[in-house]
Length: 190
Image (cartoon, rainbow, N blue to C red; front, side, top):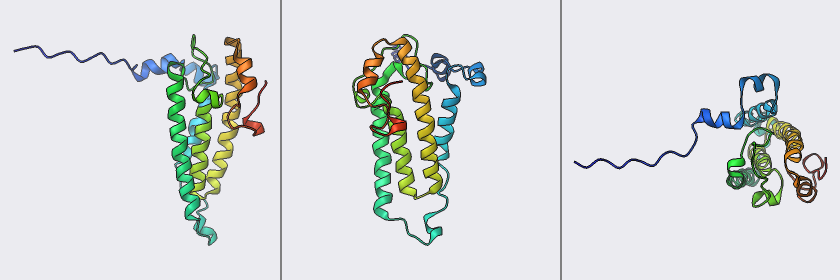
């Protein structure tokens, strides 16, 4: 009998190790030391998109146009593709907190050449897609709240990035933040 070959070692970190690597701690959740409250607000607003539309478009005696609903679904899918691109480009520098990973390199290519926060851009596109697909005032409110939270979270993140990456100021001056030419979502200096 021949011994079975060993399977290759799993290179992905266990969930606990990943949370620890990102710097998520109970103390941080209590005092927001690494921006945990921004993350919590973001996650809650994204999860709230699972709520049913309110008021339902039919409640107004108005049928939501099918092309708008289909356009929203397409926009949602585009947002998912852009999110995947941002995840892949960021690689080991990825963290859900607005504090950079210790020792992580500054990523300015790929999706990060288009804007400084392509993952936030993708989340907003997905949210807009859901809003258009459902025709819901509730989801429009969630989109606006998400834009406010992501704008604030990005500003905190950029202060930390500028402190650890001397070339961040030049990158920030030439690359849109989240959505080009929208004042709360595109600032070129802090």
